[in-house]
Amino acid sequence: MKVYAMQGEFLSEITYIVTDGVKAVVIDPGTSANAILSACKKLGVELVAVLLTHGHIDHTLGAFELQSKGFKVYAHKEEVPVLEGRAGLSLLLGLPQRDLHPDVLLEDGSVVSLLDFPIDVIFTPGHTQGGVCYLAEGALFSGDTLFPGAYGRTDFPTGDEQDLICSICNVLFDLPKSTEVYSGHGDCSTDVAPFAAQTTIGQEYSTNPILHLL
Image 1 (spheres, rainbow, N blue to C red):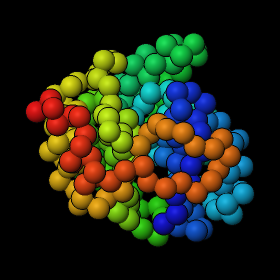
Image 2: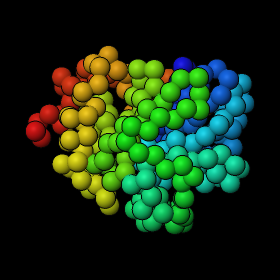
Image 3: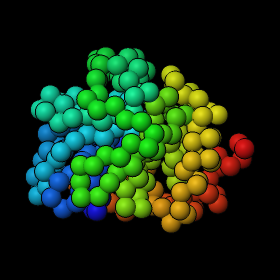
Image 4: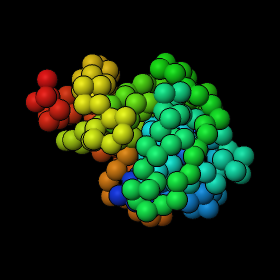
């Protein structure tokens, strides 16, 4: 597995391209469809699908056009109201309200079998009601659930602090401590480039301030 990243268009969102060297999925396309497809062409890989950790527009901006080009959008079934309504925060960022209808609805424990390695779906509500993380080859793509030294906010529609605490402390912190974490925001190049994990589950288990909420 190789992980590449490019900066999204809003709030330092990170768009991830995860590839087996031939095919690729994009996780949280926060930049344009053209930029993502150009990145895949540059990497010499074929994009096969769009995986969403949650439905906020800074993470879904390119999904609309990618879907119109025939790429299937995957999201948790509980996230549909966020994707199809104002809870997606388009209006908050000054964008027109657009509803996104996922093609494939995921559940906790679903396995996405699109690349040469499985991608496990971990249901982690809290930042939104249907948020998920994706686990592949010892790497966790945590969206806006878990950050290096921080955790997702819960004051947006469908957010819930107790759900987030449970998702992180009872679910994510139960993963192997060596699990590398790629979160949904941070600094990276606007051009696609290899990207290293920002932290590990072990590091966050020891130091993340969410522990003070227990």
